[in-house]
Length: 64
Image (cartoon, rainbow, N blue to C red):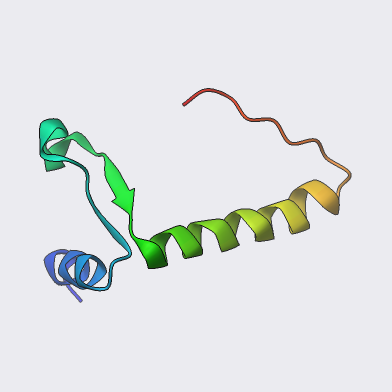
């Protein structure tokens, strides 16, 4: 699957979208749709389970 086809599929399925027009799509900002937000949440939960809890690590949240 080509890049453009993949991006079209992702936008049609509501995984993520280019952010508001003010940022211009080429600026690299993306908004998560319903499916994308769910996928992101599951990845973070898996990371917490496998890396932080299993290794008795500590989680921090820095500025973005």
